[in-house]
Length: 300
Ligand code: HEC
Ligand code: HEC
Image (cartoon, rainbow, N blue to C red; front, top):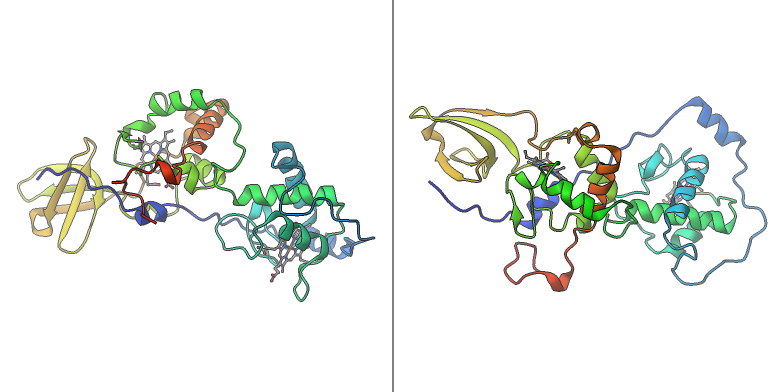
C-alpha cells in the first residue's frame, strides 16, 4: 500500500528533544575550595540598570566571560555548563525556572535566595551581569542565542555535503525520514543542536526506530517504524514510501539499534563547516504569523 506520509504531530517532534544531563563534578578539591571560598557579599554595590535588561546585552564576549566566572564560583553547587550539581539545581535548559528575567537572576546572584542554600555571590555587579548573560544563553533557544558562523555556507552544507536534506525537510523541501527542521532553531537550544550532530541519543526517539522486515511472501524491506503496535506496523522506506502491514503479513521484524541520524559530523565536517551548519540551523525558526493555515504545527 502506498500512502503519502501524514505529517508528524508537533508533540512527536517535541519528544525528540533531549534533555541535557551533565554529571556534576565532585572532587575533594572542590569541596575544599568551598570551605575556603569567602561567599559572603562585601559592601552592597548599587544596582546598575533597572528593569530586566542586561546592560551588557547578550554579546558573545559577555557570555564567554560569564561562563568562566560561573565555572569558577558556582559549580561547587550547580553543575558545569548549566547542568544540575550536587547542591544546586540545573540552571540551563530542560527545566522550569522560577527566575526568568534578567533582573530576577541578577538579584538571586547578588543577594542569594533567602531561606535556601543559595548564597550571595560577592561578585561585582558587572561580573554578575556577565553571569546573567551566560545563564540566559544556556536557556535560550538557538534562534534567540548568538550563534556565530556563515549562514549561507551552512545552508549549502545542509543541501549538499552534509546530506541532511536526504532525510530532513525545511519549509517543504527535503526528505521525510527524519524530523522536519523548519522550526528547529525556535525549539531547541544550541547545545541540543550541537549534540544532535555529534552524539547519538541514548534512546532512539519514538517514530524513528530503524526496522527491517521480511514479509510473508518473502520481500525484505528496511526503513523506520511509524505507528508500531501489536497489530500493525507502518514502514517508511528510504524512498519515502509508507507501507502498512498487519503483523500476520510479516514473517520477521528486526529493530536496528542505531538511529539513522549520523552522529559523526564532528569528523565528517571541518570545525568551521560544523559551526556554519549550526548557524544555519539556529536561524530556522517559524514566527507565529508565518505559520501556514494548514500547518502541522500545534495550533494555538
Ligand atoms: C552553596 C551552594 C550554591 C552556590 C555556591 C551557588 N548556588 Fe545558586 N542556588 C543554590 C541553590 C540550592 C538554589 C535553589 C534555591 C531555591 O530553592 O530556590 C540556587 C538557585 C540559583 C538560581 C535561581 C534558579 C532559578 O531558576 O530560580 C540562580 C540564578 C543561581 N542559583 C545562580 C548561581 C550563581 C551564578 C552562582 C555563583 C556565583 C551560584 N548560584 C552559587 C546553591 C548555590
Ligand atoms: C540518513 C538520514 C539522516 C541524515 C543524512 C541526517 N539526519 Fe538528522 N535525523 C535523522 C533521524 C531519523 C532523526 C531522528 C532520530 C534521532 O534523533 O536519532 C534525526 C534527528 C535530527 C535532529 C534532532 C531533531 C530534534 O527535533 O531534536 C537534528 C537537529 C538533525 N537530525 C539534523 C541533521 C542535520 C543538520 C543533518 C546533516 C548534517 C542530518 N540531520 C542528517 C535522520 C538523518
